[in-house]
Image (cartoon, rainbow, N blue to C red; front, side, top):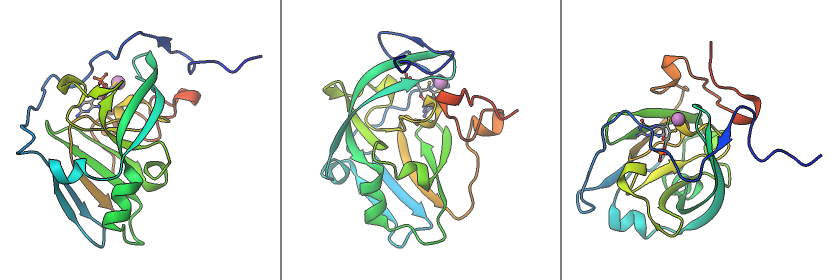
Length: 187
Ligand SMILES: Nc1nc2c(c(=O)[nH]1)N[C@H]1C(S)=C(S)[C@@H](COP(=O)(O)O)O[C@H]1N2
Ligand SMILES: [Mo]
């Protein structure tokens, strides 16, 4: 039997559905920056021009929202999480990172997940800059986790010596969030 296209309990939709807390942070590129802080040897603060000049990757990946929709084959382009980590050099004590975003949303992941090949800070979707409603100018993409881990409008990456839960994780959603095992809730 062929492997299923989508995880259990998901249906395919043709385009991303917008899902967030209802506030879209609009920051002109000349005012945008990314701060990388916490348990790292070289904390960084990059302007848009500096961030956009980092080496780039492209991936094709499916996107699974815990509310039951999946959009398949998204063509993301941006900067690998690993590329950023190599520049700031996480200390041996770093185990996790918290993503902080323009409107105050947060989510966190263990470094073992974030350092995977397919995790990136995406600036482009399907060949065009990501629309602001979908996280432009830059969002995290974590293909192997439910989409609430794919933080839109990322402005700070804080490396942590002890894992901490983010916005949805403290509200009953799973910390691990694996779509293939329907790992939706922590309750
Ligand atoms: N900053 C931020 N990122 C976020 C969210 C949010 O509320 N704020 N919602 C998450 C959820 S639950 C989903 S399903 C996806 C939706 O991404 P989309 O709106 O581009 O489809 O963004 C995720 N990233
Ligand atoms: Mo979601």
